Length: 114
Length: 107
Image: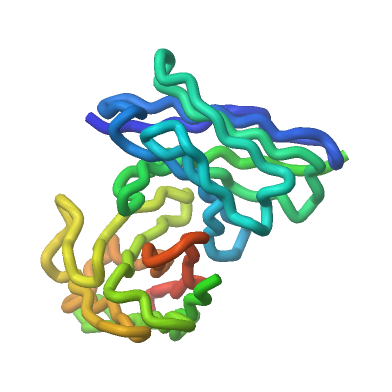
């Protein structure tokens, strides 16, 4: 069945870089796009960016200067890297199969703190 | 960016009650509107896509409607597992944007 699972460090220092991995199963990254969505505590979700099925990317302009999304199709993984982290980047980060966000990972909590 | 405004932000309700959550887009989104349920543990469950289509496995007590800029999610008879956060999200243009959420809570 379709599954997505996020992994990465739970704690990141201010000004450092966040690196997250989304490992998928049950579908091919060359057939479906995958998006990253984050959610600060107590707030609504925010779409961060997408890895298209053809390898192209799209980013939220609010984050574009800090964000990079890539993939390794042989490992069924999509990667997120975001630099210059600040405290307001704290929240839960999700990956979701795009094309209607029909499947979501469980999310990974990221805290930006010294 | 298209802004999505949900109302109410909090909705106290009783078991068996019929409830409706509203979502308004800052511009027309041509029915490209999805709804999600989020439980306290953070799990996000897709409910409805393209305004009114139920995702697989979603009970028929959930329904969606709307057009243009105004959309709604209705639960016909509340069950205990329905008390959660609900979010709308537009798929019409990038960046994809979400509403601020509606907390459905037990009265």
